[in-house]
Length: 288
Ligand code: SF4
Image 1 (cartoon, rainbow, N blue to C red):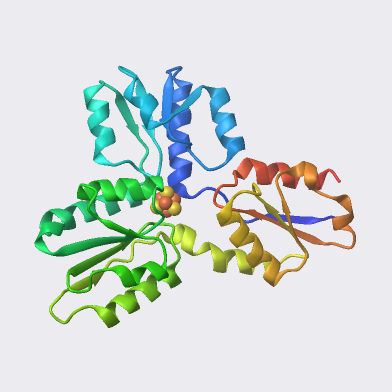
Image 2: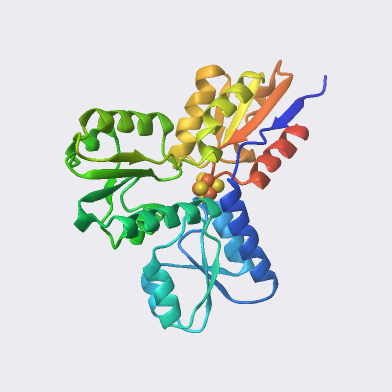
């Protein structure tokens, strides 16, 4: 009997990252030198593929020493200081900031302009300190926004001040809701609290989606770099619902013994797994 193989449609790069890569590819196809500020995606193989096409990854320090070049800003977005630097150094920006992130930056900036922290309001961002997207968000508030990384940090907020709560797009919805609840219970009656659910469903919905995908197959191959933390979470979810799940970094790790007595294989991966890598795994299976 022939093996049925399905690649999970919902796995792989989100549309923000896919669009950024397309923009880079279009620009490189014109034969132009293109710099990218930070890794375009958290996947070594994809970064290497783009490097071979000519993409040069730089950090902020290197950008400061460049003039009259083109620099691509990746999906995570950048704070205003990066745009100012580009203006100063006559750098042309290819802005691949994800529209969802751009929208969030604008909302935070508007809120900050309407109620700067000097007037007794706190803009709070639930996110990872130092993460590129969070730096871009904090940058909208002259660095005055308070970042809380997890539920345990919420208690240190000043509940006598107005609180406007936002979230990094990739954080957990459950934890965000716990934080909202805690603030609602502790906010002073004289202060205002407003929360804005800015979590991107592209990532938040992956957990339930991947879990129903994994239950459908006899064998699940979860394709992902072993260092990806998001990958580990999604892999564990697949394993929870289907014990016959294996994490692999590429087609070379497929063990033919796994296929014995198997009729259907589901191939899925993390948000940082390139589609082409899942396709390579499918092709390797087809050749078994
Ligand atoms: S906001 Fe959503 S679509 Fe955009 S880069 Fe983040 S995860 Fe991807």
